[in-house]
Length: 443
Image 1 (cartoon, rainbow, N blue to C red):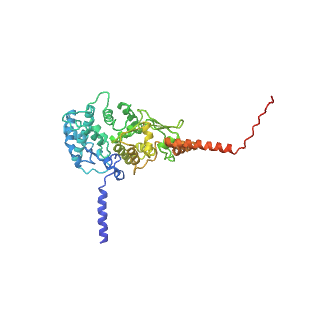
Image 2 (image 1 turned 135 degrees about the vertical axis):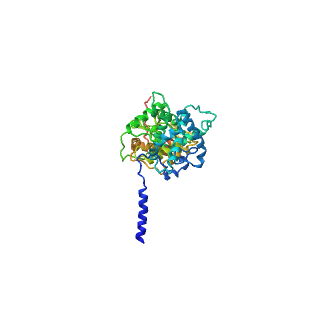
Image 3 (image 1 turned 30 degrees about the vertical axis):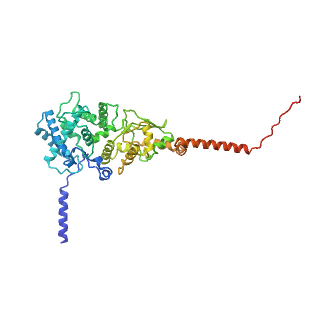
């Protein structure tokens, strides 16, 4: 009986083994790990529109499905393609598209191809429509651009890790359009996409979209890695302007807070409008820490959380956004640290108060891990070496303990003066007074 039971178990397991599909090396779209999601579930959840299979069919997103079909209709008119032709284009890429998702997609071929076509055309029409939108009104029958709030929620949903389509699919659909002769479809679509996300995702203000595209092209060429989707695109746009050597594994990771560094004599300086978030530099020659401006508002938390989530899921090295938040988290421990960065113009706080900024940076990396290297290691090493100098430590302690406020500083100076006067009095009171002899000349 036991032998028969063992045979049945083995047969059952063998059947499951035979049904296993090979893992894809092109996987790049993930569900956010539960350990990250539980910290703030809303930051990873679409509000108004589902893109791709992971949130497809959820009840609160059904209302947008009809408008997706209207955008599909616009795309067909724009390209002069038939539905059958478009379906055939997507069908040829079905296997490759499925391989981009970490988990198996339990949808039939018909359902999957239909969803990808509808969602892909929706994205392209939204990005194209944004170019002609003046920020106030859209077409009377356009539910997205004619409503003052909806386009902002749609754009936010398009930056979520679980709400992505592979970029190659979007390029495949976009290639059905005509583009200017001086551009290819790849550069044209990236240019439109960067323009669509530029003021949402902390890209350099002074740089044009064309300059950002050139930088992206250089990075793609140097790393030989194609951009996977919009979340990946936003990370690439923030990567540092210059490459740095591979960092050692024994670097000093922890640094004092912004207040402590400021008291020790480190000078904070605002970076230029052309610099990316990762263009942080510490100049050892004059003790200047240069940090580009960061505009903090309500959209920053979901944006940073999804960029970090992708790095955590996909990369072992070059965790640029994770490294950036790690450094900012060390600089900001209290509201006083925020004050230092706000006063220097490094942080533009639109969150309401400094407590919100402190909580944001102290919570973004909960349950996240750092990579095998740390891009900003030279910055933390320089700051640590500065603070290891005894005089700088004493100066910081002196400022923190005795000059942290005008009143305490005044009382400290008064106490020092009183101590000096007491010392002088003690010296002179214990010293014998010499008699003074005056020679009197007789008259």
